[in-house]
Length: 275
Length: 89
Image (tube, rainbow over all chains, first blue to last red):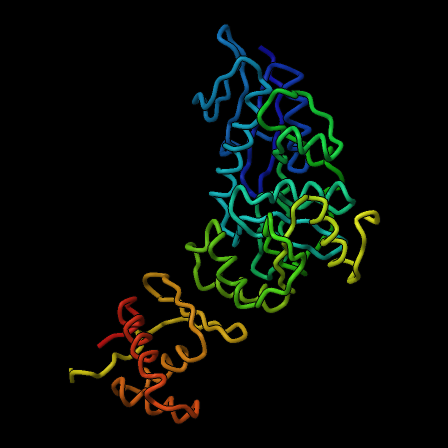
């Protein structure tokens, strides 16, 4: 069987992806394009395969079956979830559960737990013209510079349609959107967090200044790995709280987040029509 | 140990200040305490030893308030430091 191989580097986690189906290979390449590297024979790389059989399709990681489905499209969500968990789990840099968008060399981070609307808010900002950095993790190097983690974005079909994205599987519970399909992916050399915004979906107050001291526990609470080096994590969280401006954003629709992001990057009030 | 004396801070506690909050990181348990200015003043006073009454009197002078107004807060802070393992006898 001919294997179509692709290599990815997920923030230091090497992945070797293989499949015999060109359509699967193309879809995975598009979803993970920002992480693409030249195919190597790195024996430590995570071996990931999507294989077809008489019972349907199977996602294998390290030769172990992780998920099965009638259609390979249905294996994309578990594929992304598995790779995300392994990537974030292997991170040594301070990482916080957060959405991140950028403009030039400045980033806005939306820290918060799952289900807060980070992915949709980030997608709305990227559709409005800002650069995609991540819908999952704010990863900070020791000098507080941001490491981009532009993983594929998962959206509910209704929201994807609202954002003008094409949907291949309209009946699916979630739509996997490639970063390049969403819009521009940040590709500069140095990126610093200029604003930390705590999303408050359902709130009506718009942008309200947040005490800096509140941002430290917010970042630590949402960190994936502060326990690896607690002292360094607190120092980085405190550095961010001191150097970035901190906000709470009450909003109803994701487009309102894009409006607020424009106000923060431009330093002026804007109307929704301008975004 | 004299009854009433508060313990001294354990060695190696990492203190980070952001605006009016102090974040204390325990060196062994990695537990973090978030302190307001009064609680941080109590923490600093613990380094000097003494009991709750002495610390209360000292801080009442510093903050220019009546001792009776802050005694409960001092006692609660000391109890929290002790419960969380930030003080040694």
